[in-house]
Amino acid sequence: MKDALISVIIPVYNIMDCLERCVRSVCAQTYKQLEILLVDDGSTDGTGRLCDELAKEDGRIRVFHKENGGSSSARNLGIREARGAYLGFVDSDDFIEPQMYERMYGQMKKGGCQIVQISRDELNEDGSRRPDVCIPPKQRVVQDGETFLRSLLLHEGDCSFCTKLIPAALLHGKGFPEGELNEDFRLLVQLLEETEHICILPEQMYHVYYRVGSNTRKRDRNDFSRVFEDIVRNADYVGEVVGRRFPSLEKEAVRFGLYQRLDYLLHIPVGRMVDSDGFYVNVKRWCRRHVADAAANPYLTAKQKRDLLLLTLAPKSIRRVHGVLMRLRKAG
Image (cartoon, rainbow, N blue to C red; front, side, top):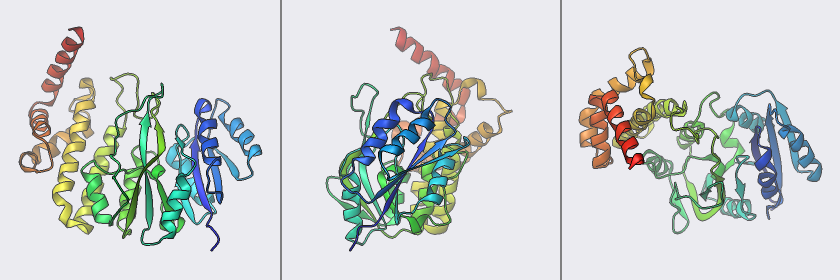
């Protein structure tokens, strides 16, 4: 049987320093039935021209130029233009091992799985390796949609689309939510409602380049990315999905909602912790309604329960004390 075409979608924006490495790692795949879609999201630094130059070197590369609309918008254009039976995604500052798509497609051909996931690692700008965010399994693992969702709710699973090979038909009529961060989580939860089996491979063949300044990777700790609001919205969304589709995961979903709000309260600048900020006020109210849930939830650590209780009772005061302690620790 002839190998199927895989469409690899790469959203691109002002990434001159990393794009060539990324694209060449995809072109070097041992699986040759690829098309590579570079979606230039309104770059202003010459990246769009670099995309066109790379396309001249490999006929499998197709370039699309669009007005700036964000990564989700660029990915969605790629989904609409893709010709492949399967879709893969690579972020333009990352790179992949030559055998990655061959390994994933080989597993897909065996049948029994609707989504195949490879494992990943993360690298600093100096090339040193960061601690694993997602611990790879020791061997191939197959999970149903509910089990995989449970791993996401416990912050153990990998929600990134960059590590996955997905049938194009599964994304028909769907797309990444535009204008939001943490967008992979929202779309993946939608797919899990329709997915019976996901295969997870142990090889760490996708390399995340931890590039300071991209999305949530800010240089200044006082920067407050809107991702911290989006993760709270995603917690509410997945809570609705669990209630409708996976009721056995209720405690895990409550834990997820508490954890995401704790993350929000630990990062919002103290100056924004005011009653005129409606989102902040709603987070406080939600946490106060769920104090008993936080205390009793078996999936929260003792430290998380303590931090939630303190930040729920006196969020601004606790953050101020925490800030003073951190400054004293640095001074010492």
